Each structure stands twice: as C-alpha cells, then as structure tokens.
Length: 67
Image 1 (cartoon, rainbow, N blue to C red):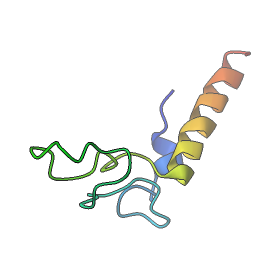
Image 2 (cartoon, helix red, strand yellow):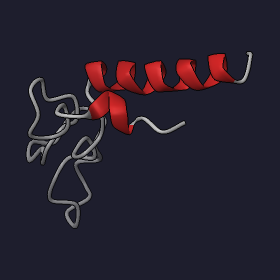
Image 3 (tube, rainbow, N blue to C red):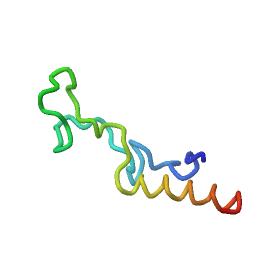
Image 4 (cartoon, one colour):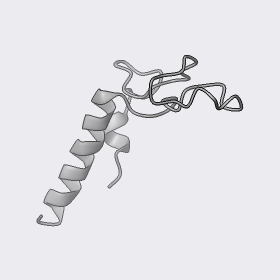
C-alpha cells in the first residue's frame, strides 16, 4: 500500500500536520537514560491523524484486491 496520495500536503510541514517533526522533549515512552538519543522517538512518526491516513491507504489496498 502506498500512502503518498493520502499525505499530500499533510506531512511534517503540512496543513494539517499529520507527522511529527523533531520532538525535542522526551515523552513517557522514551528511555530517559539514553543520553545518545537527544530527541524523542516520536520524531518523524505519525500523529493520530497520520495513523488514520495510513489506515485509509491500507483499507483502499485491501478493497482493491477484494478483501
């Protein structure tokens, strides 16, 4: 499944932004002891709206193959 069409204009600098840019604050899921990891693991990962766009892409692909 290729989600590119769903993310057009909605990436890191898009409107709405559906993928995190660089997240400098550690988040609860990050290991605070990793000093060699200066940014959060959430950097460049989808936000909730971005996860939905990935789901739309997968659903479209599954429909196309008859599933």
